[in-house]
Length: 530
Image (cartoon, rainbow, N blue to C red; front, side, top):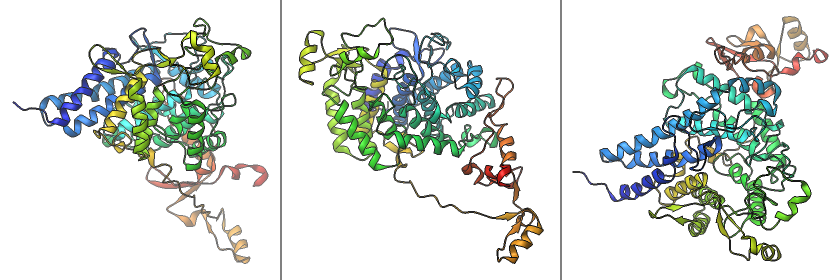
């Protein structure tokens, strides 16, 4: 008989914790995860829930020295794949919405943000929930990239490749698409109004960068399974992102969701100055003993909230100021970001704070509650002296999103994994690898007559024919070729809709049928500049 080593014994505790607090809620048919009290499986919640399952599988992969541990590694890996594919199939059933949204960018055409865990079908109507959540779709693409790059195949067919390519088109213009944001309710006036949210734009930017030239079939793929991203769309998202931080949106001065933008999982910001400014703003305005507030005047789950109302009038929101619920979830982010930024002192500080917020169940497992709320009888005292009152547990216990990140933080703290293993595409190095772009311009002539005229003025250039084996074409040709990306008749996808091609995308060489091609900028197609 082979006995487990000491490291594996400790891992077995986290294996049991994952089974008890997360995997028991995974539907055996669809692979989707839903809380114990309802059937709603949110895209974002599912993605964060499986992060720790994937991370734990990587931990077992390194230490599995007995057959039982190898089985656990494979079980956890396949549970991750099953959930990712469950989300994929649910979104595939809404391929008509994916296609329509690329033209309309309308709320009614957006993919649903949550599905039934039992069958993967919608659980609420188009207008009964804030479904347009760009960050959720972006997080799916980012997570898919990380898992695929780690060597785990999630995508199996070319039809599924076309879905992913169209999801890239779905999010690429996030910089100009107002959505309901990470909390599903829209702007802070709480009237269900969409607005530009930095948490959505940042996650979209990260997903676009991550998906660029990704082969979804891994080592078994080829050109047909590679995802293409328009570089100009990525840069536009970055420009809006940098111009809005440290704000979350027009109505929100800041939001704890920005932790996902300046740190794990997106690492979307390259400027260390803006990262620090945003972090300081979040900690100073939203930090507390029990966690962080989501945003200022957030009435969710407070004692005076009306659970039967989804929205409030603007003048009513003032009553929630200083009594907003505090979420241990954001302590989890602070711990993880501490380890990613090699700031162990900060990571341990927030890890210790988080441990004090945990609830131990009758089996001895530690659970992360959704939030802590001020008791109704202490509201006036809390308003008079913010932070003075003790709070009580509210919401779900465990809160699966936070539970998963807590387990991930423990795996990092106990060094069962290192950050590079859960970030194989090196998003964390985005800040360090930011370099100034070098622009090189090549001038060519269309015919020998113009070439001769320029030579008389001392300008030596080549014609299109003289630069063989390179071929030079108009950007209209490239736009036409891009129309075939993501096209799939079975699913109703008609290819990329946008006809214009930006400067960054025409500043590349393309290999087309073993020919090296370059394309003139879009501006050359303007008749006034011919």
